[in-house]
Length: 194
Image (cartoon, rainbow, N blue to C red; front, side):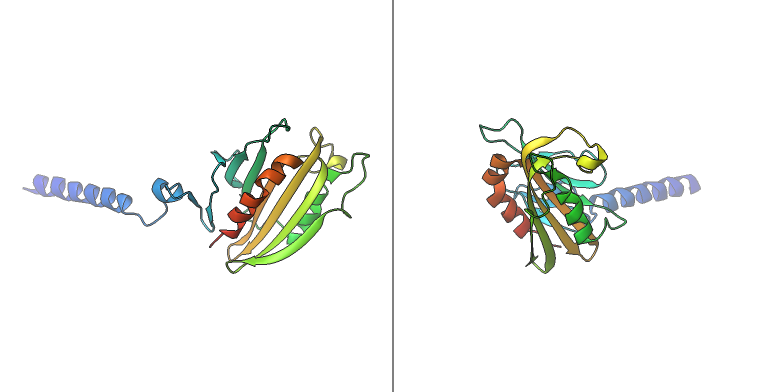
């Protein structure tokens, strides 16, 4: 009789664990990538525009990653990446300065006087926006010997100051391709919610 009770209790415990896992209130695959085109992560939700191609993030700090197909005249696609760093990731101004520092003019001069910075609130989230163009160095900038230079590039960078800390959204690519996708990028940012 004790043997039967133990087996019954074990079976009930196992069933309880299975049911608890199946009824979890956390975002599962259906809510994270639902048919409505809404992306979910720990703190922010976005409506993903039509035509954006979702990719698996290439590092743990990249929470979402998309490829935006290039226009006919460009040789590369553009990329939108949403970053979150558990330790914070630095002040908005430090990040703006670093992003602008990844660009230079064709003759090798800084572009800081040509970059624009603006601010707005999106659904209660304060946002800093930087717009910069020139020759792009994908890593830390030309002075740190970073990667192959990419002339004719543009970046629209967003710093979203949320309750969970800053989130960073970088949209980079050839200038014509960025111009083509700029309206949908702004709709992506404007859909942001905590």
